[in-house]
Amino acid sequence: MARDFAASEIKPKAEAWDRESEFPRDAIRKAHDLGLLTVKIPEEFGGFGMGSFEEVLICEEFGWGDPGFATACGSTMLASYPVITGGTHDQKQRYLSKVADGCIASYCVTEPGAGSDVQSITTQAVRDGDDYVINGSKMWITGAGHADWFFVLAYTDPSAGYKGMSGFIVDADSPGIALGKKEENMGQRCSDTRSVDFVDVRVPAENLIGEKEDDGWMNAMRAFDLSRPTIAAHAVGNARGAMEESLQYANERETFGQPIYRHQGVSFMIADMATKVEAARLLTWQAAKKADTGERNTLEAAHAKRFAADMAMEVTTDAVQVFGGYGYSEEYPVARRMRGAKVVQIFEGSSQIQRLIISREMLRD
Ligand SMILES: Cc1cc2nc3c(=O)[nH]c(=O)nc-3n(C[C@H](O)[C@H](O)[C@H](O)COP(=O)(O)OP(=O)(O)OC[C@H]3O[C@@H](n4cnc5c(N)ncnc54)[C@H](O)[C@@H]3O)c2cc1C
Image (cartoon, rainbow, N blue to C red; front, top):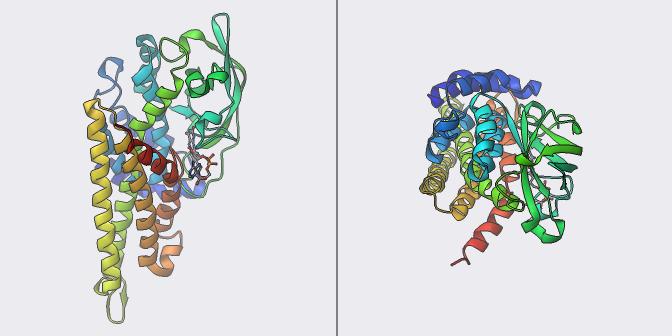
């Protein structure tokens, strides 16, 4: 179903969404109506209660259709994971049910001065009676212009380092929230990315995620263990699309009296694309399968995300090469795929940060 959806509702529209920087609201709603966006929401809150494995199968197809679409609809689950893993029953009832009904949510961790180094965030939440009061600025927030609620990471005890962080669910219409303009990004231009400022935003204490303060860091990081396999899958799908488009073009385009596929320099490039896609998919499935056992999958998720992101950058760049001058033009999809591949090496922990995680995990018992 996801593959059919990508072929009919994403791929044919992706070029226009990118050109116009248009948020694919209607297509996201259709994907939701088909049940493709809520497979991991537990059944009791209106979702399908499936696992990460089913989720990555769907995300690969979204990335194949268009990497920008995959990101545009991915923010909601990224914001939902901390609620799924750490939220109270009441929070799940109130906010996961909204997601099951089709709302969009955003994950607000990064700040203008703190991306890779999450502990450098300065947003604070101070208890005041039955509320917390949040002040701070978040940056690069996917989906923020369309979100109904935000997951916000803030310090409740700045003196305690990462152990003093808490996660909050914040309704997007709360007084004191100001959205920045939509960023003009290099690629994935249909996805909405902007800053979100919080000035004296009052949040009821029952929206502190979990039963107590200071679980925010663990919750935010556990969310990445669940989201990174989906990002890896989206990169696999994007690379698979570039490989298929290269194969077709190489069979049609002729130089020196034969299709360029007959030149080994080209066919070997496409053979390498195929191997890389297969390898990245297997790492992705491994990370998702481990998540579904309930075991800690930090290492597998980092392997998958790092390898798939770098692989998609290589494969889409080679696809532009196969297309020659036409690859450099927006007339063919490979240029958009290459621009769209780049950000996957940056967000949700850059490729350097994944290597940091992998090297640290290798020293764990
Ligand atoms: C389109 C887009 C969408 C995004 N969506 C979201 C979102 O929804 N929510 C959210 O919270 N954030 C989001 N982000 C933010 C994203 O997660 C950060 O941009 C990313 O974590 C990198 O942080 P930074 O931009 O501050 O770069 P920096 O942390 O300043 O890093 C700059 C460079 O230095 C490298 N580097 C940093 N530290 C190290 C180190 N210790 N060792 C080796 N290299 C290092 C990095 O890999 C990078 O290449 C988004 C970003 C983009 C571009």
